[in-house]
Length: 464
Image (tube, rainbow, N blue to C red):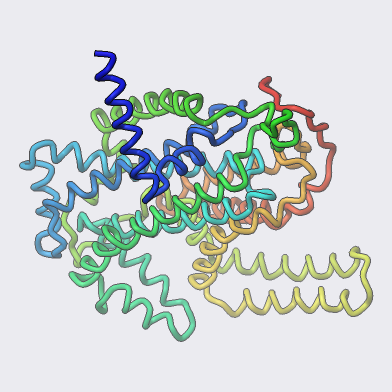
């Protein structure tokens, strides 16, 4: 028996040598998993990277099975979804895994991005890792939006109608672009077909490629850690980090615990509350698309609602406030900033120009601009953050206060976006919109003031 095992081992080694001469499988395995050195003090927040990959795989696999029975035809799409739910063996499970997986994906991505902000994962030398991650976020939003139309429910239909019409505000090219996206003058069978093609083929390929680039860029510069210090600052005589451990098997085993907990929550939602009270699947989407019956409230799914609230908050009142604020900021900058006279005049002129722009642009146009800018702000984080330390453990109090206010405003915007607007709710959304943008615009200031804690020489595991 021992001889057979030895022969099997030699056979396996010989096969891998044959493969490695033609494709560096072992080299890639060692560089990106088995011999990849990671900080030893990863905590709860570091589960979400691996969970994002898990959910991406779930979405791809369940999506493949759904396309086996789905009909991308305006006359048949809704009925094909009903057929999947009622007649295909375990079709209901696959459909709910896909719909719940979409929401789970955004929960994980938001947590993953929040971890990057609190531990400074957007800072040098990981700017490119962060930027690729932001592109993944945008691609994921496009993937979710196009997939949302496919069930051809009434909310899907009218939601697509409203969101696509926003491109009309783009000067000159807007109407042409809107018509091209729809493939028709209204949301129709042509829209459904091209959204199906984008959702099933183009965007999944883009997402997989971006995730690959994200991991390659990460492993080139190394993982950040809760202390925000470089583990290669302390190495042994062989150049290996004293505070680093191989990712495999230590973190692969640890991540399996996170996977187990996630799957319990994930399947708990699927089995007991797949629509989560209308948050994951709205009641209006259980009725077929009807161009003659508009839902009482046209709102997107929860993961878009913070940005949708910013869009709805752009009323004439907010634009008037922003215009007056622009003049005030320009005048204050001219008075208090120590620069030469021409620059002081430039500050005031800039404020007046901004006021004119706000006063002569429609609320819809500025709503689209602010909604887009709300996403673009995340791309600018590596250059807005001026703190001498990376991790929130050692950051100054002003940053912690600003981050806490930003998170509260983000949640309020998300909640308001799921509800019908009222004068009070609109005012609250406008206040939270201003807070949202002030967090980014004032970041160079509040990250450079206040007292920071001294960084440790070695990684720590204790709470701070």
